[in-house]
Length: 484
Image 1 (cartoon, helix red, strand yellow):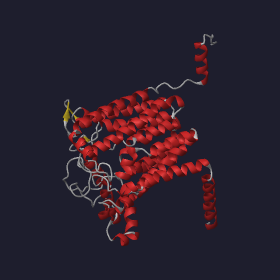
Image 2 (cartoon, one colour):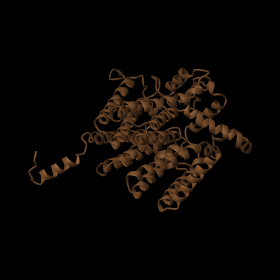
Image 3 (cartoon, one colour):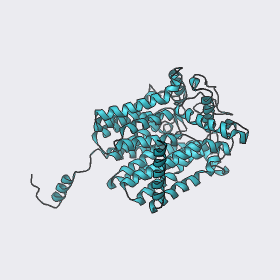
Image 4 (cartoon, helix red, strand yellow):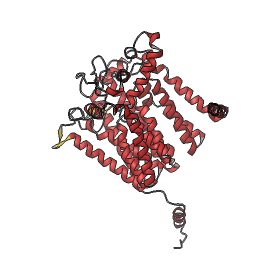
């Protein structure tokens, strides 16, 4: 068995070395190396809102025992509504993510404690609160997730398009300012969620349903927001893959969820604590509708109102739920009508955009998942679909980045380093002084982009003509009589 494993590793290495000796292999290696080199210096920045320190603190809790992961952590009030947990002026919050995130940072803390703490003579929790090796170490999984996504997008594009197209598509993602700002600068985990989400999307399209179900479950187990995609995945499978594949996908997701969640279910059943923590931090009547997410609520001047407030005689959160539900139904109807991989990816992206625009409790970065999904739709598209999808991808990237930049610059970091290691007092002062009009402008641009995305999606309602239909239309246009 050992010999067989060694032979397998040697064979894999030989294939990899052979691939690297090709022009394409060298190009991909250069792209990944360049993406990594760009990110390494940014990783020493401590980020914003103490989010990274919060994740590391969750890792500390995980190392003290998974059996009390949720039941032992409690929230401390303060720091303002809608703000994430952390240190200093920010509230220390209970673990309000599914177990994947505390597991991930628990592993980082464990490795740090055993190998690096004797060198730095400080806990990672203390070290991560200032620029330097602490943030760098904590962001290593985010770096690896970025590189894995870049490679995945390249390989998927290369299956369907030219090497040049695949390189440009992957490079556009590698250099995306939204990806850089969200991940290796800020220290958010959205990129780590996007990786299994993309794997799930491409796996389903390639009819690898067990991998798809397991990957989607992993995305939800890292952060709760991807659960909004589950109905659309299941609908696509029920309609186009058949009942057997629907069951395989679902069972793979359930088994993966059970396996990952088992330490928080046995010996102590912590599911009620986990759900309570997630609801308390993400969606309840006391939270504000928009935490600097420049969306529909911000546009109509109610962004700082509570989810439980009344609007037009109805609870605001209920209106948001209904509007998002309508978007989800439109996406589902299109998926039911069209068996088209690009349309499926586009419907997922539009659903995420609707979630950001209308649901309560949104943050400035919650549009992020639109970017990889929109790029996936470009990669999966036919040539006649591409122009509009590329426009959506570029617009979503720009708006997501600007929403984060203005949200950070006009909030608690006004006058600070909204761009890492660069003092821009004029820009910071401008954003702070014009925060409201800038927010309204971005909210209006988000609405325009969302309506455009809806129009592009609904424009796919009628599929392309079959070859026979195309030939018939061509002959009719030329005045040639078509025989019945």
